[in-house]
Every structure is written in structure tokens, then in C-alpha cells.
Length: 62
Image 1 (cartoon, rainbow, N blue to C red):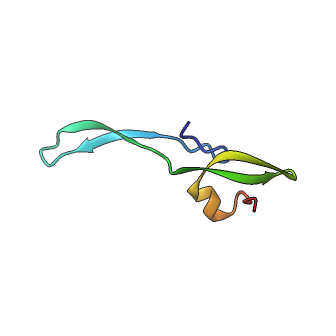
Image 2: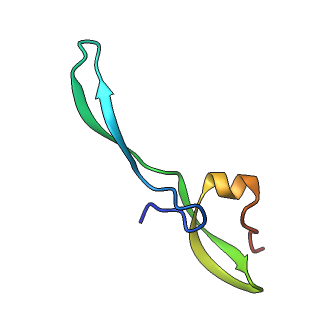
């Protein structure tokens, strides 16, 4: 579910690296919000990352 419908941003995987250089799995989740947007004149709810909201790639419905 954590996937932006506009840019496709989703989870990323990597490692936590401790001071002793021991590595454990880590997951970064995208900052996804469920908002109402205007799409081709109609209003619908979609999951959009905050980067797309901030840069104006979507227009929020009022």
C-alpha cells in the first residue's frame, strides 16, 4: 500500500550499521498520505507522497 500513485515511490531497503559495523535489515517507508485530488475534472481519493503534494504535481480538491 505504501506507494505513491503519481511518482511510484515506495519502500526502500537497506542496512542499519552499528558502531561495531554489524549490519541488520532496515526498511524506509515513503511518506504517503491519502488525499482527495482533482483528476480530469473529477474528484477522487488516492495515495500520494508528500513530495508530490509539495511540488504541485497534484491539485488538491477543496
